[in-house]
Length: 263
Image 1: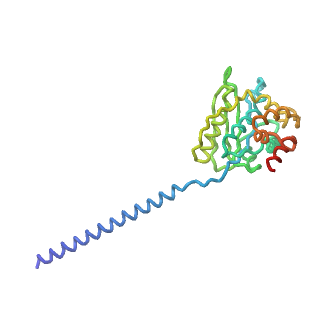
Image 2: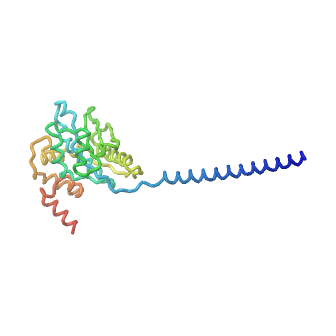
Image 3: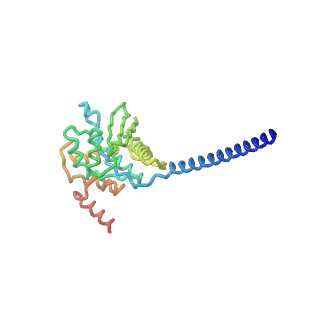
């Protein structure tokens, strides 16, 4: 009798262990499936929302703030022009026309001709842009210059981005392109192909910087409508760049180009 009871208990116990193993196996399978499902949800590709709309503002020249030599005054407008030119290499960037935003920028900067992060963000929202780019150029040596480029988001929930380099003036254009590329990778999370290009140096933009300063009255008295020589030189290199920097309303030749493209 006792032997019968022991065999019965042993068989029942084996069945219980077998059931527990089956339950454990099922739990492992369900857990793996759940983890796989979660993993797939995390790896969903980021939706492409189109080009990033950007405002480029006049730069600050440190020597002007310190009341020193004004030889770099032209760089306040030449730098953003070169930055806009470099952006043309990156189709994921849409630049708000310089002539469209300059009246708003002048009003926002006031007599001090400078911007804060808050005023830059406000300006971006005013012209329906997602980011504002502003910067500063400082002479650091006999032939070297420090450039700081700040990328300010229109939304306070987005983190700003800063690009800093010290270079010779002839290399600043190429570094603008590299800075834009780094920022674009930061914004989109995508790998941006590095093009084997070399942008012109900042020193080659001096006459254009002076023409832009007179056109819009950033640091000198405005003399709009007199930049025909600068425009003719720009048109030989890049028509779209020219149309971003000067108003087709002020210069009928640019309006004709736009109309011809529309036709």
